[in-house]
Image (cartoon, rainbow, N blue to C red; front, top):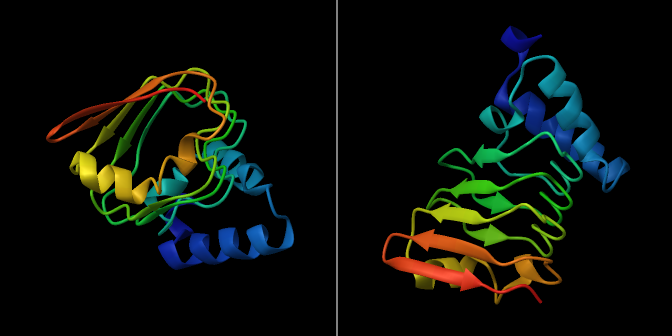
Length: 145
């Protein structure tokens, strides 16, 4: 199955599944991962709820070229470290809600760029812990709300 997967195919599958079963794209992620496929290698966005509730993830490196981190994308996951490329232009509401293990986000852009894509801390609303965002020109302490 891994050799037959194309970026357009996974994007279509995730988009269709998301439209029909809103909030359950994490099931697709679990399926693909069980087949040895890292969905981030094939999708153009981090879809809404893509890693929601996935306690097996610890560190994610979002590939360069992905522009959107969707709503609730890492909500309630075991994520503790996230690498975000400069290509990301938007982070959805509650992307990191209840990520109680998340400590560090490594961002390839500047503090001002991070504040812009984070859209006034929408990704951090109702977070349960503090997170340090490391940017190329410094860092930001994101305090739990």
